Length: 588
Image (cartoon, rainbow, N blue to C red; front, side):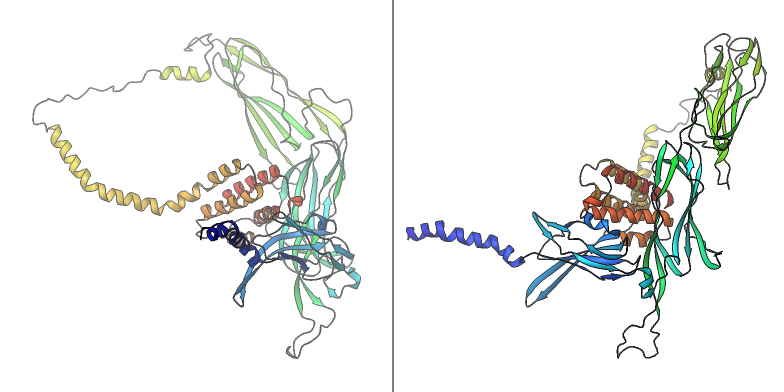
């Protein structure tokens, strides 16, 4: 009997344990990864869905889609879907990732083999051939290259640093446009941008171009100010829209089709159009350049004003510098004047008023100095010399203020003479003494009919005991009724705090932070949010442009888990997430 026990412990028991450990692997089966598309013949600008289906795995694969971006544009994705089914008492499941692409060119294109990582294993998908027909051989009247297109119109192709150039994006169409899903704004690296026109809903008007009637809408207009010399590029604007088209070729009919159905009935397809990259040549300033040039480019006028020319010592004088004109008013500082030493100068205040309803950025900058003379005499205020470059005249200009003199008399009635006290301290001298009471007090006799302190305290405690339960109940009711308001009010602070604490897995954490922010801000009960669900909830509550930016951010963060090669840098996506959350909080 001991030999049997020894044999069981050394041979049979280890075998049973190994079988138990292998049971989950045997039940799960072999992992299979398959790739497919919903179409392999496309018209120009049509989209297709690329699908990777995984069976036998408990997790979604991590997929690098960067090899596909040579011939195709990523429109959206990845989307996730999980399916489970029971067949003959056995459970099987599939996990599916989907992306939406559109081709960059026509002809025979190969969607390359992609790498899908599951755990420590890497699977390769099979390549797929996509045939993109030329617009002239397209069997669907989606409109040729001239039926729906974007135009970018820069008002100039050469400029100086700081010189304003205006860029306009227009959409032309001859086909029926069902709607614009999203607009990807161009990237303007190397420019300071001031938006001039960015409508949430484009307004179309009729135009005629070469005897052909179009509908045109301005999608975006901005003033750009170059910040450096050299060649600067403005990336394309990308627009995804829904277009109604009719088939030019009758499709095969089924016996179950309606006999009277129109074989050429219209249907809606998705089209993605974009502008070309704009290259701007930024010239260097002509030489010689003024020594005190602060970066002002445009056409300006400078004026100096003073509220009074005759004052007494220790009295304040307001000195104003007023700069008017057209140009890069937000991109330079004019120098501080050097006032006489006997004038005490307080830090200046600045005010900028922009002229509305003008494409050329113009306005007025007012800088005000408070001066307090501490000694009597004549003071000559300095003339301000302001150089700037006029790009229209292609030469340097210099303007200066007229000379101003103030006469200061001795102030014998001043509280303080020849001191170094500031203006605020002088103003407070007359208010140093504070009287508690200035009237005759009323006297009360003690010991006559007074109520005992203990009796008063007893009554107060009794009243408190009676009122306390009701007060506590009202307090709890108030907390419950205002919980949603307080939760919404703290949403922004909590979200920004979480963004500052992100250290790794940036894109996945950003998605969760944005979703938690929306739940707190909007008091949502459901925690199952996705990019499309968030867009549906916010539709109509925020501007269309911000809604598109939020949807793109969420989709990009989801894609980072599966396509790290095509996603923005962590610092860039953090800055973008922080900006979008702040914009959401200001609009909600």
